[in-house]
Length: 121
Image (cartoon, rainbow, N blue to C red; front, side, top):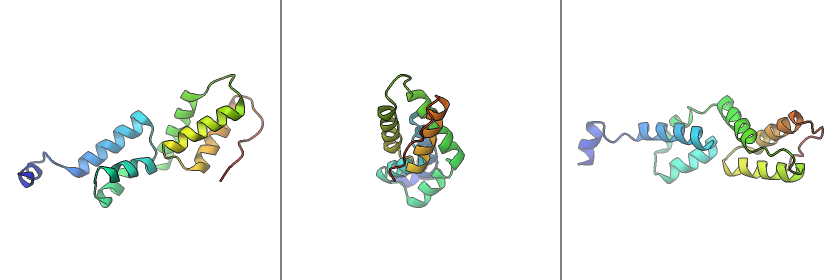
C-alpha cells in the first residue's frame, strides 16, 4: 500500500522535508543546525535533508537571526542580562555562536551601547 501511495505522489519525503524546513525556518526562526536535527528525528534520508536545508542560505539565516533579536529586544533591561538571554535563545534555535554574537553586538550598537559583546567561544 505504501508503494502505491508513493507511486501516486501521496507520500513524498523530499517534498515533506522541503516543506518542514521552509515552515519551521519562517515560523519558528530555526537555523540549519536545528532543522537538520529535526529532519533526522523525523527519519528523513540524509541526502534529502541536505537538499531541503539548501533552501536556507547564509543570508537567510542571518536575516532570521536579526529578526529574532529585534523581536526579543527589551529596552531598559540590563545589558548583560539582555545579551545572555539573546545568545541563549539563538543557541537553542541552532544559530552558530559567531553569528549570534555578531547579531547581538549589532543590536547593542544600534541601541547606543558602545561596548561589544564578548565572545565566549
